[in-house]
Length: 263
Image 1 (cartoon, helix red, strand yellow):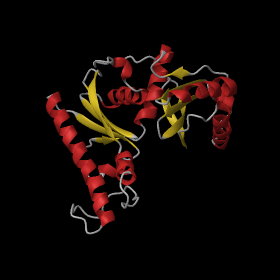
Image 2 (spheres, helix red, strand yellow):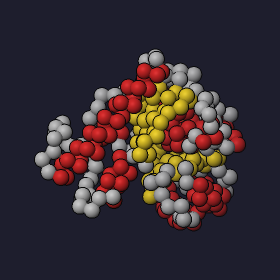
Image 3 (cartoon, rainbow, N blue to C red):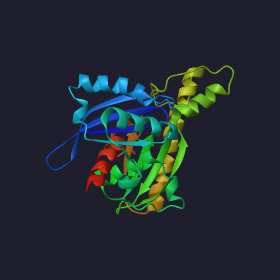
Image 4 (cartoon, rainbow, N blue to C red):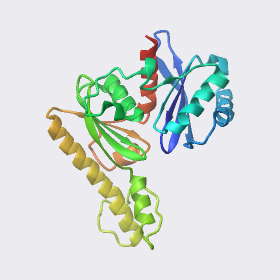
């Protein structure tokens, strides 16, 4: 079995994968915990070993561990978790045997975040052709991938929750609201909370649609749009720009990378 961890700025997602006779991994379980760079390897172990037990998995059944992180302070603690509690030196996405095996055609290839690289890897492996990948996380990332799997560049926008935090945090009277789809398609709100929701939600949809339209024009060939991240399903109900919604794209990229590292 393979244990994979995707460390983001908001959450850490752990996934347990089971290999078939061909060495292809299938997800068996997924768990999510809030990101905290101060969380030690021992704290991770207390939480994770209990979840493995609930799943009926012994720690000795874990034969490989891989993680990707955009929180550098968490790297050491995950390495401690792997070595102390599983006796495994983990693969680190983008390093050593787990180095990226696709071309990164941008000015600063080393600046590409591991989460973005995993989305690129997994999207090309699963869908092929020219692709635009949108990842809804703390930031919203747009990636352009050509039919060879080469990363051509992209853009980064504040995530919708960051945008809302800025709006509420910098104003004295605007209330905190929950992100959800407005009850109607009207963009003329009748009260303050409704007006805020319209501005944040439909404004975000318009931003996504505008960037995708411009990216497709630059690519110049038909491109499939793949959405991932926690809010992808929410926005899928409000726009028709997504060809695929794949919530597990990033974590599946870790399984694909682990298999590549083993060959």
